[in-house]
Image 1 (tube, rainbow, N blue to C red):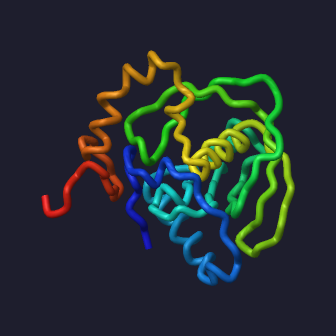
Image 2 (cartoon, rainbow, N blue to C red):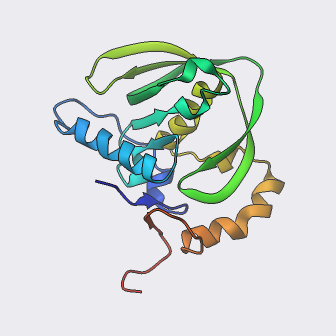
Length: 190
């Protein structure tokens, strides 16, 4: 099942998501499968639960599209439950990021190249792992979502002002996308 993607301006995107327990979500594998289906349908490389209206600490990524740039990313597809960043290291580097909740806006965002993470996989197996390069970047972007942050928060005040009108337009549904979205400033029945 494809979820509609929650657009910029919805409060769920600004709320710190809550940790989950295995017995709370016996259908977690179905939620993960639906999130992957939603992500692929929108041509994304990552999707966090708040982006589909679920305020839980869960995100999925498939960074294999970057395998041409980083050969170690072939088949790099993972679900992250209750993730916690333990450490971010290295010299920050810029990469042009976009977001399924903020369509048609892409900006250079600076992030550290290495992230050490504690998380559970979809089988509730605990992992502590270090990720580098584009995998680290996608993880950091999705992790921000479960912390109630967006990539636009990392922009300079000037850049934010320059895109403010477009951001407000997205929340009103003034954007053309090929996937289903829910817009916070659009009244039902219109």
